[in-house]
Length: 238
Image (cartoon, rainbow, N blue to C red):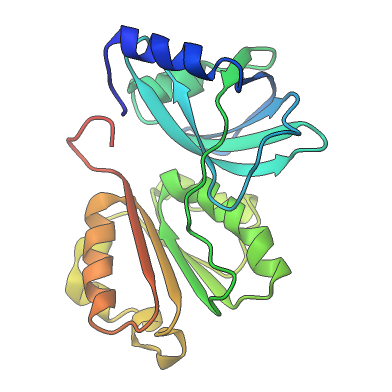
């Protein structure tokens, strides 16, 4: 529900008020002009977090936006997320304006079943909007010793962000529409390699890229494909 009348959001806020947590922005860091890492501090010991857990933020009277928790230390009361700032969109404006000392009420995180511990291998694809998910996945993949690889399509100005985030086994592609080209996708080593054809593929980010990649993988891959388009050019709120 990215958009709704003000009274609807007011009702939801009242219903969730007893479960929400008051957090203070404790640190902000610009990884580029359009990617911002935001750290919050507060009492989150009673909240449950898993790989890919997300939080819905009310970013205006009539708009809400969803952000994946990129890092959490519940005992220390620390929560982080990574926001992609793109123009004057409601979510971008809200996250872009947050600064150290600002107070925010955070709703309870909600799970999304991206991670299956029984899966052997993982391929995780996305763009700037998927960086939080990648950071959420990394420690679990390392701890449980899954073979894995990150595939990221990023704007030129963001090509070094994977290194800043210390994402291991990561291949960065310049964002130029290639992931919408099925012939190009079919020739990718990760698609052609028998070694990876029983992997769990997690596809997020640009809905157009996600659809094309999923179509190519379904013709060859014997593993599980989870696809979740976070946004679509020309469509508000996705």
